[in-house]
Image 1: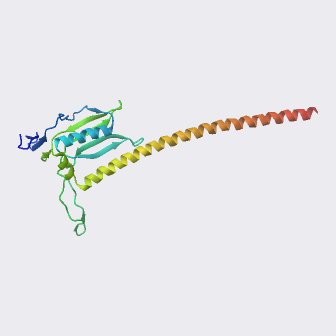
Image 2: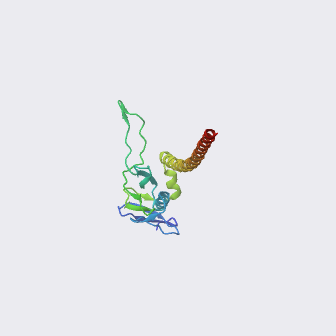
Image 3: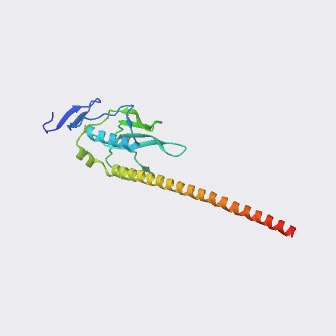
Length: 210
């Protein structure tokens, strides 16, 4: 136990030092087969797990339906995933290099939409290749501006997609109403035309007899 109350130092399975802040609730670790009601629920769970364990979650790649564009699978990982690629021009680096937060960490979960309507974890990589320090507020503060912007834009995009889906539903419902009224109007016009034809036929008959 560390000298600071409520903080415990242990070693991760990869041999790295792990500082764990003791909290009342136990840490629930992801596992393959774990189910969620939605993609957002999976994100909230993994984000909380990341906070408790000592890293920052990054929303990674997804796979979409070719038919309607719906997200069918999503990868959530560590913000130290991958490596920063230097952008080089004809005369060397285009921009001044800065300290990279990427270390090629492979820790992640993959969730897929199941035919049951649930989102299921199909892959879980636990180990990180860097030290984990659980200091929630500090960890949040160390999140660089780029990652913050990505998270903000991702949330905004999600909200816009929900709005678009709502507008699409409203437009479809409106078009259905218009179509139904148009069909009823066509029937009324057809009945009027038939009545006129019958009237003309009757009038011709009367003229002929007269």
